[in-house]
Image (cartoon, rainbow, N blue to C red; front, side):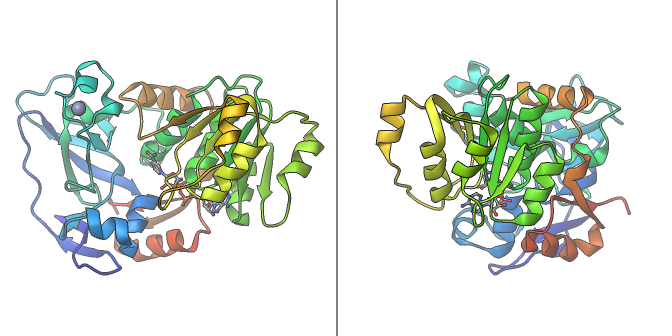
Amino acid sequence: MKALAKLKSEPGIWMTEVPIPEVGHNDLLIKIHKTAICGTDLHIYKWDEWSQNTIPVPMVVGHEYAGEVVAMGQEVAGFSVGDRVSGEGHITCGHCRNCRAGRRHLCRNTYGVGVNRAGAFAEYLVIPAYNAFKLPDDVSDDLASIFDPFGNAVHTALSFDLVGEDVLITGAGPIGIMAAAVARHCGARYVVITDVNQYRLDLALAMGATRAVNIGEQALDDVMTDLGMTEGFDVGMEMSGVPSAFSDMLDKMNHGGKIALLGIPPSTMAIDWNQVIFKGLVIKGIYGREMFETWYKMASLVQSGLDLEPMLTHEYAVHDFQKGFDAMLSGQCGKVILNWTS
Ligand code: NAD
Ligand code: ZN
């Protein structure tokens, strides 16, 4: 089968031929329809330090996808051939304390699809049936192919009560923008999002942010004054991974504010702990999606009218994958989809 793989220890990604993966007793074989390119795939493409230390070569990458079940292991229940599915990219161990308590997102032995084992940028993918999520008919393949990052946004945004709250999101990458849309949909009062990339800030406005602030050009304090905010933000979502953005957020939070941290800083990050202590801030780290509460919430949010279509800014047939990666590298994009059926 065709697959996009990291074949060499250098920047780039290559189309190759690999065998269709074997289907174990508890697995599904999924024919891939659509995939989306994640920031993680971009790290692997660029072959940065994290990728060099993490990704064995050769490796079929990719973990954002929608497809169709074409075969199943003999122990699988609850799925049928022909089911449209996406899937949770974190494969959990099932035997650690958190897994056994049903807190799979806190598994200490997580394996990543397209990171630690063969991924979804291929004509076929094998995953444990446990990890698959059956798609409602009214969720398109395009939309389902971004459920993995949408799930990061939903997991983060639903970590704290948003109703009537003022929310600050630092980083208008795809995840930050989708979190802004979720916050508005769920009843936040003001959703202010920051970035340095004007294309993405414009997209955030189209997706429902109250204000999209280019921090190179405008001070957050001025925006807060303009909105009549006298005290500070109630909820913060750090979605840039940039240390200075997190520092700014700490400074703009109201006392008793709650922060969810999703962005991954490049290395150890110093902060002003006095902000945390004297303001009584609550900080929660977010990894992945809750299994599978986040997935149900995602489907329901879409079915209750949350419109994610503006996020889907680029789509290419898979043989044009380089154009897709170039769009991602440019930063002038929302989500970039590759079509494996054309
Ligand atoms: P992204 O890189 O596309 O988005 C980050 C955005 O932050 C970019 O648009 C960038 O221009 C912006 N930015 C840069 N400097 C900024 C600043 N000073 N202030 C505000 N914004 C600034 O990433 P993404 O795919 O949307 O993911 C967001 C973050 O979440 C990344 O750090 C990613 O590594 C991380 N991530 C974490 C998890 C998890 O499970 N914790 C999962 C996926 C991604
Ligand atoms: Zn576990």
